[in-house]
Image (tube, rainbow, N blue to C red; front, side, top):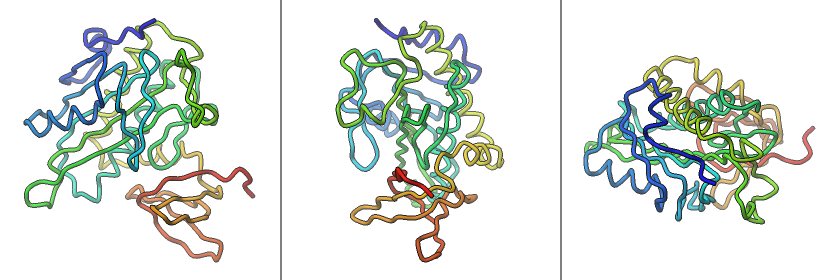
Length: 263
């Protein structure tokens, strides 16, 4: 049973004027939108799919993207950002997705720094932001914000490596209007936050939705693992942590896992 995604249905619920493209199946919405960006596509171009054959996650991982159980979309923006501020885009996407999920379901959405949205203690959404520098390398030329949301359980179930940590927004496939409304709300929330990114409102909500602050976590940075306590998130969206010796530091990237036992 299809989720019933379509450009026309999404636009019924959409407030912002965006250039939306829907494909039933693509290799990766991020990969395809990068091609469009390089060809000169404008800000607000959005590619949406019901299936990816080569979905991309962070640090080179694949993203499970089966047919008719999730929404996979990428948004093209051309921000007047310094490269170090690109983390805001992931923050904006996480808050927009959390709000969109709550707008069409009875689930409470939380955020695990930096790019995962959780419901009921499990991951329901992953975000991957990719960007390219302008010719003078002082600003971003473009950024692609990819968002994958598990809408309903896949027919074959989740793969063994993620079945205990992944979940879905709905226990069964919802009405197509609900799915298209979720996508429209997500895009509207994202663009509204993006156009007002200097406001602190999005960052405040991002911090309030955090599911790791105060907890002992492990941060994987390449071959290095750090066991620290998550203390706060600063104005640059960096995670402030304290190690076992009481030393404080700021982390701008890394894969976070929450310790099973927290004191």
